[in-house]
Amino acid sequence: MIAFATAIEPLRSANRMLGYEAYKWRLASLDGKPVQGSNNIEIKADTSLEDERKKMAGPDRPSMVIVCGGTNVEAYQNKSAFAWLREEYNRGVSIGGLCTGAYILASAGLLANKRCAIHWENLPGFAEAFPKANVFADLYEIDQNIYTCAGGTAALDMMLKLIGEDFDESLVNRICEQVLTDRVRSPTDRQRLPLRARLGVQNSKVLSIIELMEANLSEPLSLIEIADDVDLSRRQIERLFRQEMGRSPARYYLEIRLDRARHLLIQSSLPVVEVAVACGFVSASHFSKCYRELYARSPQQERADRKQLLAA
Image (cartoon, rainbow, N blue to C red; front, side):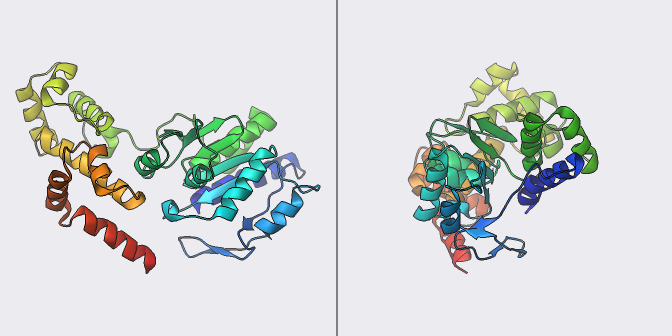
């Protein structure tokens, strides 16, 4: 709902500042019926996909279609919706995705060899499911007439970018003042808090090591390789991690690999053995053993529990 609202509100504010209706929008659902958000708020739809197909040949033809995605999007399959998006795109309509909307665009075949952005939590599963898409942990990405953003308040930044291109920086600044934000963030600004703030760690060497670990999950670096890269000895790294993180570097590295594995199990249909390989484990049995020790359940149970939750 945050992404949905922060995509529409800048347009409303722009109209108000300009004194005329520069932007118009309508809400479409598959069948024209209301759609309930994950916060249980129901949104009234103006049209259906069937209605939208009819509008393509008339004055109400859209200049842009934006898909708003939410939770459990990886399980969404609707050939009619995918076909409609392709039809719009092939007729020159710009296509956008908010939050996990990139999943829908990729499923429709629109993101092959395209730069795109998606919420950091969904990025591991998305990258495995759609290897041809050039996905980034950016706030938003614009590749020709494909627009994607990571969701949350990043939708505001992307829409302000569009408004700035249509009008000027002065209008954008006035909208920022109206919605109480001090600037339009760059597309490449961080989605997540910096490691220093997220982990509460101040030691620059430890932060550099963790960045190395997070960048090398599928093919883990040895402690010797890490030590060479940060110009420390193995013993110094061991001591720093005990002081700053309360555990050994090997244990911390294992935990972040298992965290990635958990996201893949929840968000993708990859076989457990492929999840293991993607997270740097040499065998499925070793992966399962480590996973059970950390989460008190097997990878198979994790996936089964997720399916049961979705079916409830």
